[in-house]
Amino acid sequence: MSIPDVPSAGAPLEAAPVCYRHPEREAHIRCQRCGRTICPDCMRPAAVGFQCPSCVKEGTRDARAGRTAYGGQHSGNPALTSQVLIAINVALWVAVTATGGSGSRLIDLLALRPSASYGGVVYPQYHAVAQGDVWQLVTSMFMHVSITHIGFNMLALWVLGPQLELALGRLRFLAVYFVSGLAGSASVMWLSASYSLTLGASGAIFGLMGALLVIAIKVHGDVRSIATWIGINFVITVLLSGISWQGHLGGFVAGVVIGSVLAFAPRAGRTTYQVAGVATTAVVVVALIAVRALALAS
Image (cartoon, rainbow, N blue to C red; front, side, top):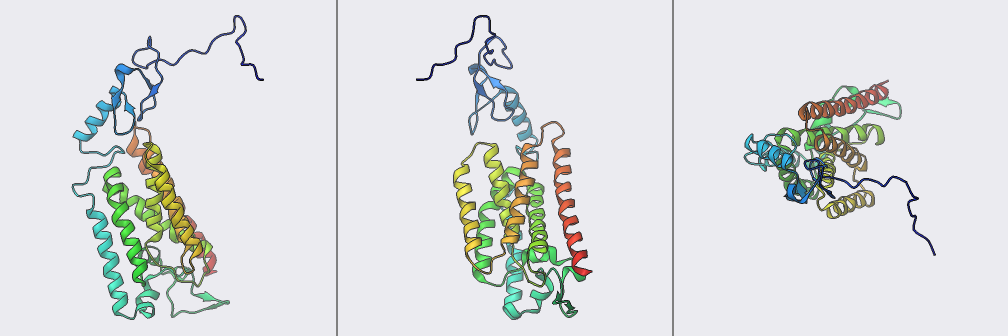
């Protein structure tokens, strides 16, 4: 039988936590935004848990200024950006389908091929990043051949996009989307066969999943369902052939990184921290692509 520890005579007792606004009152609840301890008189109901009066006041000020909880401008139509991205993807899919599907010249021109070299022989008739066709790093994000491929990606974008834009604002949402997509391309450059073709918006979509997971953790939301959904998608990625797990992995990691930068940046100077964090991530991704492209071209 264990015996509980009993403080010896004269040993100092640990002080009970107190309210930051009323130091004379014991308190055990923390504000969901700033983490400071608050007493019952200072507890203000929030969407999740409670907030302190200072954070409620700041939130009201941000709302009046038309800003989201993470500093972005509120979008008048948070679904519009996703709709435009979907329209671009669909337009390119129609163009590919109309010009031969998997045999379309657009695939060679716009899908991602790390290098046009195979077995030590360079095939100049093919477009590839290592041979200077760097636009493929971005255009490949919008290319699809299979209707099931584009259907799944666009459904995911339709569901995830407006939620993230509503939480982050349009510019921050686009930063997550494009840097994650670029990180997916970087991962393909390093981890895929150099002569392989990769296409699809999946890297950017997995980036949105990663950012959404971070925000759910930040606000103590329904993390379990989001993590389960992400887990199922990764299992499908591994089990089914013809799916670029490299692009999915790179996009997801970048989404987690950028989501963390946006969600956990300190309130004082928040925009500066966010811009610096996103820019640093983008620079690292571009540097990784450049190093790999130079190695493949040599």
